[in-house]
Length: 331
Image (tube, rainbow, N blue to C red):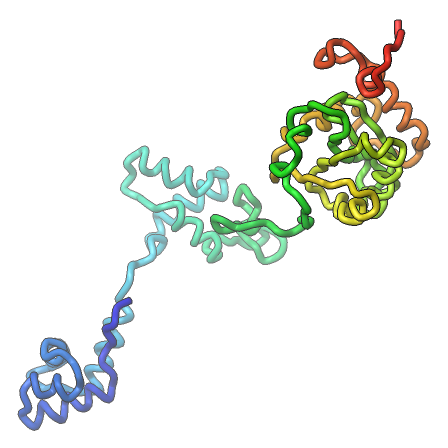
């Protein structure tokens, strides 16, 4: 931080009095606790015809201060018009404008940060450009949505997690035993019913239920109903995604003792078995389909079809055969 402070009006008046009394620069400096060179510059800069006036010195100081600082690039109307044309009419981004000016070695040079500041300052706003008061900001690729600083952590729509996937038992990671499940929902029409899917990592055996709404309370009830169909030894862990519909996981753990382990944010491959199963389920439940009128038993029928379909990763056995250690005659 710069410790220097500009002279005040009171100090200038004191300089005038002491200077008129014939005091030296050193004496004046000691009195004001200023360097003698500061007093010298003040007298030389603001004296007219050898006379120093405190009021005139203050006026001159204010005038010089107005001229300080870097001038705005867009005070040049030519560069302003060039940038405005390519931003508003050609839909170039600020960075594209900046880099193209450099590429062509144009006499006009302006950084994309300068362009962004001008946009957010409203320099390019035009009447009727957009609704509301966002103006030309709406022309940015992100439509003027709030940009977060580096390191920002998004907390909206997040749920509290109990355990991370990195704390999950090795048997779940290595697929060495039955009982470690991945959990997800398959959405239908927005705001309507959805499918709740559970897939065992070892056998790929799946359970599918219907929730009337993609809400945490409804989804929790379906998870409890699905796990109740199995012996407790066959449900050791559950790995859901981080969706808000699984916010009731603590209540499920308290009721059943089953621990939940959450994957890293934006890492669907950590639940790849469930993702693949959901893609297969889309053959029966296309995207945006309203599931409200589909009877609940039909969801169990979808699970049966998937569980009796042979899989290459299981040596062409079915998930049902692996999970129940039985041999079926399907053909």
